[in-house]
Amino acid sequence: MLPRRILQARSALTIFRTRAYSTEARERVRIVEVGPRDGLQNESAVIPPAMKAELINRLTDAGLDIIESGSFVSPKWVPQMAGTPEVLKTMQRVKGLHHPVLVPNLKGLQLLLDLLSEQSRSEVPYTDEIAVFTAATDAFSKANTNCTVAESLERLEVVTKRAKKEGLRVRGYVSVVIDCPYSGKVDPVKVKDVSQALLDMGCYEVSLGDTVGTGNPTTVGKLLRTVLGGGIPASVLAGHYHDTYGMGVANILASLEHGLRTFDSSVGGLGGCPYSPGATGNVATEDVLYSLRGSKYETPGDLNAIAEVGTWISKVLNRTNSSRVGKALEARRARAQLEKERERDGGSAESISAKL
Ligand SMILES: CC(C)(COP(=O)([O-])OP(=O)([O-])OC[C@H]1O[C@@H](n2cnc3c(N)ncnc32)[C@H](O)[C@@H]1OP(=O)([O-])[O-])[C@@H](O)C(=O)NCCC(=O)NCCSC(=O)C[C@@](C)(O)CC(=O)[O-]
Image (cartoon, rainbow, N blue to C red; front, side, top):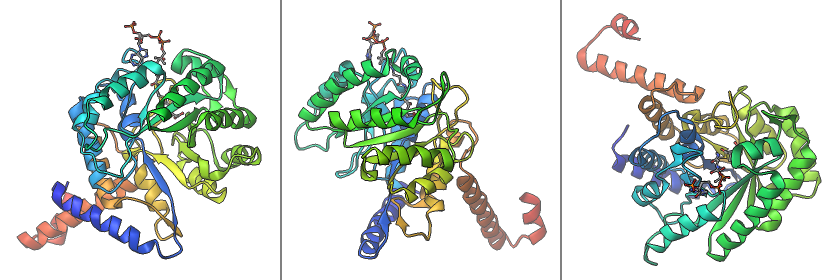
């Protein structure tokens, strides 16, 4: 990992380049980095707030501008997300960046508002955005938040209205948009109806969660045709695709064809879902960025720096890096390092291959 100052300079350069390119006809794709929330919530160990803040800082330094940073949910339900207030207080905050946090009910919102009220007006707020979440099936909704979809929508309407009154942006999630681990195939019409309900209550965007990660371009395409055909514009939709079957990138490319321009991803492919047994993490941020390299789409962040974060957090968590691109870049870095050592030490090509 490079020193933070160098990374900061590099991400400033990325931002500069991004601005420079913006006069050309490249279309901007928004990336919502969900590793520090969706990723870490699924680790068997409870991660200390300082390490979560460190992950967020490294992702910020690597040039990502929307980083989901925690949850105000019951610590009895998801102990891994306890300590979110400490995370928000200690992470570096940069004006203009967003750090959405998940809020399931009024109690969670009140805890967040109490925290925000500790700040002076001149400070960069701990966060300016919450994410509310529901599902397309009652079975998943009950497992995740102990209420039916209809009950959750009632609950979230109150939360959304109050949050907006307090000046917060509200993003919505619909889980299990393709398959539900408890009740099987999901009707796309149900996804459309729940998405519409979230938009009607004031969410600025709805993220469609293939929680189980069973979707492919055909099923995701069918879903999007139904949702878009129901009158919801692509500009208010995001794709949140778990990579269980390795279809995350393919589903994003298919979604781009349908007009979506916002995608959730997690560094190193961290994550899963505590209420979806067997589901793996989100599509890796590194894989998404690499898949769009050289295309007409412009993405935030420095791919190499993000890949370094993926390597670092995978080591810290003692898990395999799930990003194919991250692993390939790491192997390339290791090789370059060995070549540098050879040049320095005058070692032979054979000794390098032996080390590799
Ligand atoms: C919604 C509840 C709270 C209902 O859970 P409940 O048990 O019905 O709630 P309750 O109102 O009866 O309260 C039970 C206890 O929790 C406390 N409590 C109640 N609310 C809060 C709160 N906000 N923060 C802290 N504490 C809270 C409350 O005070 C009480 O404490 P006690 O009296 O027992 O000591 C619970 O089910 C819950 O927290 N669920 C969260 C589940 C979760 O975080 N899931 C993962 C995120 S969703 C996801 O990952 C999918 C997504 C978004 O990524 C998209 C995709 O991939 O599909």
